Length: 280
Ligand SMILES: [Mg+2]
Image (tube, rainbow, N blue to C red; front, side, top):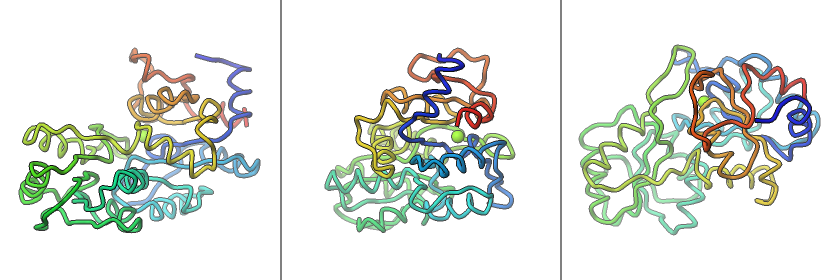
């Protein structure tokens, strides 16, 4: 844990910032489908934009394409360009392409599949009949049904890799915690096939490296990057594994009174973004 002047210096001199969305800078309202900014969050991003410091917003949500999230954040008042908005499907598209896994069954909605389609991958629908599927990718998919389970199992039994956007049970919303759709889907697929999902969103290195490359930063700059989030198992774990600075916020799913394992412990734990704004 670092405090006071050291925190201020590291925040001010950071090479770049990776922000989580839900529970960190904004809360999604499942009724309106929009976002509401959390205190000081807009001012923090505006301060970064004013100084020209690179930053991205990386959500683990895949309900919408990145550009739709960026638009929702702009409607809430945030300075976020489309290219600064990332979802696990952004990093999944890059990883699948590099791994040569071009035929992918997506257990997700259109927003989840969009970055893969944009990257030129051959996307197979959740329960579509298909031969030669090389990967099954799971994400936001409330429409999941038995046909999709069966089709995905057959692809996996026939040799496809299991990859996922996210594998945490909950995320924060305006109306309390909500179920991360891919978590129970992954559990079913693992139970049926014994294949464990490789995570391509946070807290994976794939996700961190994707954010670094969008910010135009080399991997060697990782120790100067600040990751801000509310989920110890996502943002804190990703930052700590990469050697970046982790700022935890007690505004979402992180509680102050819970003792976390070292790999998930933030460098600094804040009640809100005011001290970060002050440092910038
Ligand atoms: Mg969050």
